[in-house]
Length: 305
Image (cartoon, rainbow, N blue to C red; front, side, top):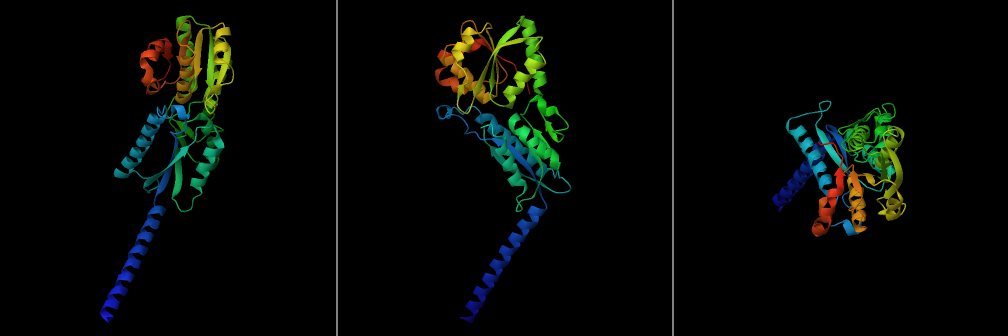
């Protein structure tokens, strides 16, 4: 009986020792690592009637997979920051255009005392979120590397001095559009923009920098949160003197805009549509025999990776 009691006591002590050792090891490991935050959009932020097609889901998953792969390679080849291994935390941001929400998520992660120190941020995808995060990151000396935010105002090295990106600025995209207009001898257009920093930034560049090269006859603003235009699409295009339609919006909004145009029968006939982002073909796969022939009137203006 005494031997069984002693064995039981030793077992309890051993379990406590292993538990304490494991907690200590995890604590030491958390101290001896640094983190990079990865900001990626939620792939659920699409209207319910489009959710099964998931216009932005593919590239969202691909971006997160590449981010995880980069961290895994850094661990494998022992690429350290200040002699400390690199870990990561993924933060999914909403697509509602609320930059304060993304800023709050980053602040919460940085101030979390149970996690290792944050040494950098990969993301965000939207120029709107970058506008909110950039000044804060610059203030605390935290580098941000975005793979999708293209707004030209982010080139301001005073306000966004720790902001970097792996994609070209919208200035280059605007130059390409102007050259395309010049090649086809176009001088006017109707411009449809997304209701975010990307859309407003494109409108600002073309109307202020390139106003001598092209004239924007009419403007339409598309709110992706409400899935609607601020004015009637049919009436705006019909009364406009231009038959060139320039859509400056992200992929999610561009896909919805084109679907509205298809439903209204506006992709055929006299209109030529220019897109600054891809239109996800999965949205039209179920009725491609009806819609795909009409997409020949659509031109994509985009820099190749």
